[in-house]
Image 1: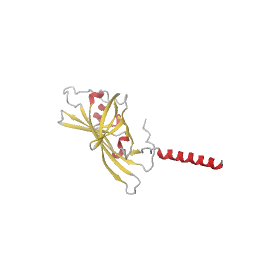
Image 2: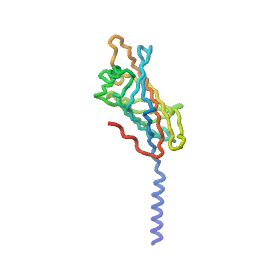
Image 3: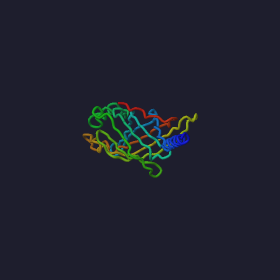
Image 4: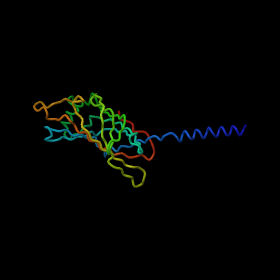
Length: 210
């Protein structure tokens, strides 16, 4: 009886250990280096005679990263639109106002991926972009700009680059110059350069600011 009980106990322990081994490891959260990342945009002026560029300086990007299969990764981003910066304070004030982002009423824009697809030499993040209260499904093409192994081997640095066009009118930004209707173009170029690092131990994503 003692032998039988010991054998059953050993089988239970072995089975539990096997189940633990079969569990896939959770994908790590990448740490985003906001000081060396850019959430930027460019807008054509007078049908492309010039371009105005700007960026948002206050944002959170949470990336769950599967290094072996990037299509199993995911990304969630929150951008606080009041942080818009085009280098001209009066213009930035207008962009925060009623004609554009309405920053006081709608303080954030968000993106949440639903899937990642391998496409050509890069990838496409499918997901929902919500801006000025309007939610639309978009396809965000991106690529891995490169990787760098820290000299002390404690972390891997990974850069991501994404670029796409959005029509501002699709998100309720219909402002026009009083005298020149096409002074500010409708198609806005979105340019993202996100620098991240692979943590040495799996952790939790940073808490988003309120």
